Amino acid sequence: MRSILFGIAASVGCILTCLVFLYWNPYSSDPPEPGTVRALTYMLILPACLGLVASALRSRLLMYAAFAWSLPCGLYLGVAAIPSYFNVFLVLLALYLVAAAGFKPLPRFRRSGRMR
Image (tube, rainbow, N blue to C red; front, side, top):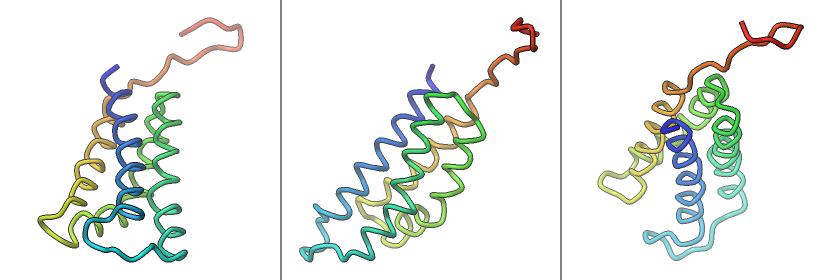
């Protein structure tokens, strides 16, 4: 159960942190460029949505995929300026890993419908 909560927290936290980065950035008063919005959507928000699906399905593979997909951009934003509010991305990446490691495989079903 904790792993599901960690996965949901990482995914929702990533989406909220991206929204703060784009629209309420304390370090910039300029509006975000369309390319920036597109890049963050593809590199962080879509993997966060995948993380929500992985949490709902308790899929270790999907959660690892969400982690791997968001790792390059999350590392860049988390390490680019230390200390910064956006170092939260590093914590969120760690939560993806903790959630994936905690998921137990679901029991497999035979064709007859019984569990092994």
